[in-house]
Amino acid sequence: MKILVLVKNVPEAAEADLEVDSKSGTLETGDLVYSINEWDNYALEEAVRLKESRGGEVTVLTLGDEEAEDVLRRGLAMGADRAVHLLDEAFEGSDPRTVAKAVARAVQGQGFDLILAGVQSSDLAQAQTGVLLAQELDLPFATLAVGLEIREGRAEVTRELEANTLERVELPLPALVTIQSGINQPRYVSIMGIRKVRRMTVDLRDCRALGLTEEEVGPGCSFVQERRLLQPPAGQGATMLEGSLPEACRTLAGIIKDRGGL
Amino acid sequence: MSRKVLVVAEHRAGALAESTLEAAGAGLGLGGEVTAALLAADPAGLEGPLLGRVPRLEKIIHPGLAEYNPEAFLEPLSRLIQDLSPGLVLMAHTSQGMDLAPALAGRLGLPLATGCTRVEEKEGAFLVGRPVYGGKLTEELKLGPHPTVVLTLQTGAFAPPPEGPVETRVRETVPEALSPRHLRRFVERLAAARDEVDITAADILVSVGRGIGSAENIERAQALADRLGATLACSRPVADAGWLPKSRQVGTSGQSVRPKVYLALGISGAFQHLAGIGGAQTVIAVNKDPKAPIFQEADYGLVADLFQVLDQLAEAF
Image (cartoon, rainbow over all chains, first blue to last red; front, side, top):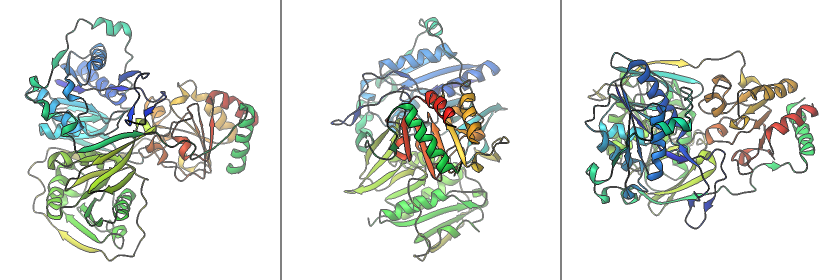
């Protein structure tokens, strides 16, 4: 079975102090650490497990700047066999539609049985690229997979719905599935593991190699006319407990007793 | 706004989703003429909440629409959009909207913004706000001008319209066939596994997030919960990591809770989590990051290391 996994290099935001340049409305990325998008890591683990249990081959693909090669190396260290990097300055600022179009050009006719992508990325959380790629390639798809089985040429997908509910759907292969966090426990990737794959080649493709002109990609092709990031206004919301920690905790205990009816 | 708004309804197990009413509320709030599209096998019981709230209801009835399936929905919806030419197509940012909206926008070549919490119209374009970077920042986008823009809305971000003031004109269509293609097949709906603890019944919830750091540390939070007679719950990253069962997860994909006190320890406050604690009477948040979005929603906040707070609180009880 030939499996393709889409991955993205994103800044780690959960523990980071995010600063926005108020003039440009863009993120100050200088101090941020980049890594594989959390959802993509689950997708990659799922692909490698399928390969280990059924045989076949896993290709990991990203569209991103030169640093994005790190997530491809990580994918190879995790067990992927090939890596494809769509790399062109003209891609910068492309919206999900354009990303899907470029990826479609790269994978069309390559005979992938299954394409996996993260449900969304932890940075902009658009949750669009996977489904848009399925549309580009005219493949059946299912989003939000928390379970995936391959049986007799079909993907059996368990989708996460709302309020602790799930549904099971079936797709004939080839198909595209977007993977929800928590579907598996991704394996640990060591620095040694990444070093071991340093000689593996990464297949680089620019716009021209994909048969796209520079006018067909980038922010100019987006329906988005303006985009800016905002920091939520400080000093709104909660009453903040001040003072020493023991004092604040005594106040906190008082509130819990009072409001909780203890 | 003089333009039309199409709201794509969502229903499951014979009940209309509250998020559909929220989308209708958002459309009416923009001054749009709202049409709700209800695709179903049997609309009985589903249309009730929409009647009196939206001026128009388009029912599309077919046995193949009993359960949501993008392949079945796309064709009739595309036709409806062509007929109606709405300026805006709204759906909830749910398991249906996240599945359907990109497919619809991709197929018809329409602009799409997902997970919006704010929408306004400006010079023929739409200005939307959406939480990004786990809710730590807001992205503001200007989409269009374009004849039709598609948006998905975060659940809990918009209020449903009041009941009753409008007379709803209803039209029913029964298409002969839905789609030439039947690849994706709905098999069954399942309830996620439950454990013996019901977090929705608790008066006090001690809830832990990514900040708890490891499975081993769960015990320390459990010890505090035991002292308080509280129940231990968690946010998504804790359930994803397998540190607590999924049945303890608070949020839109987990469970919505309404305790007297919700004590959030090391929970940053992604929108999907906050939407699950709207019914809590008092929310107290402890986080070492003063910018954590949960402080925007909490009643009381404490910027501190949660492990020190666990120790100190244990002494206070």
